[in-house]
Structures are given as C-alpha cells and as structure tokens.
Image 1 (cartoon, helix red, strand yellow):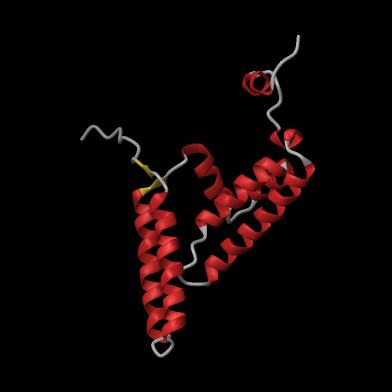
Image 2 (tube, rainbow, N blue to C red):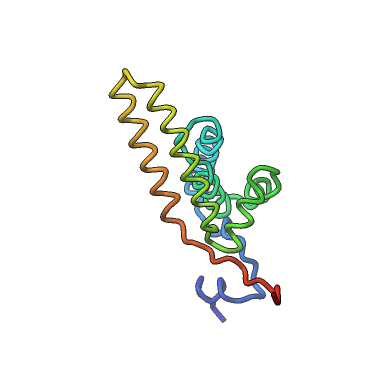
Length: 152
C-alpha cells in the first residue's frame, strides 16, 4: 500500500521527524535563519526596544523544521527553554507577560529617545524598531489565566 505524505504525517505510529522530509538546502537556510533569529534575540536582551521572545520563538520554529538536535539543544537551555516550552504548549502568552514586555519597552525606548535627543534620525529608527517590536508582541494571542480551584 502506498501512503501519501499527509497520511504518514497523521499516523501516530509513524515518526514525526520533519527534518527528514525537508530538502537539504532548505534545512541549511532554516538553520542559518534560526541562528540569526537567536542572535537577534540575544541582542534583544541588551538593546532597548528589540524584543527577545519573538526572535527566540522564531529560532525554535526554524530549528524544529531543520534540526531536531538544535531544537532539543534550544529547549534544554536555561534561558530559552522555558519560554519555548511554554509557547509550544500553549501557543499564547499571558496578558501580564505581554503588558510587562511592552511596558519595559516603553521605559527603555523613552530613555533611549531622551539620550538621543539631538539625533533625530537615530531617534526615528529607534522609534520605528520599537513600534515593530511592540506590534510583534501585541499580535501574540492572549492566554486566559487558569481557573482557580479556591472555593472562597
């Protein structure tokens, strides 16, 4: 019996290793994109206005399609693993996390704009980057809080 890709992917008895079905050139491009995204995520820790979470999630998405080993490595890291596991489990963020991220961006961008007060063009670039980062965070679906079992 001949099975199609769709039938194989839906069969729970078949392995789900996506990288074996991805062409080699695409795997290399995805690995490169994953490392670039990861680098931008690390820079996001240091640079105000550049978000970290979306870039780490993008790196995870690239690695899961290109290299199970790199995906497992990223999941095992102390700084990216919890965020990636949470995303893969829920595909959303708690509202509190989103507001905290955007609030932190507002504070750090405000400081940056004040420090760069005499450099209008650089201020504009920083502001546009911040707006793009905030938009990326805002687009992530909200996760409703877990219901409380407290009888009070």
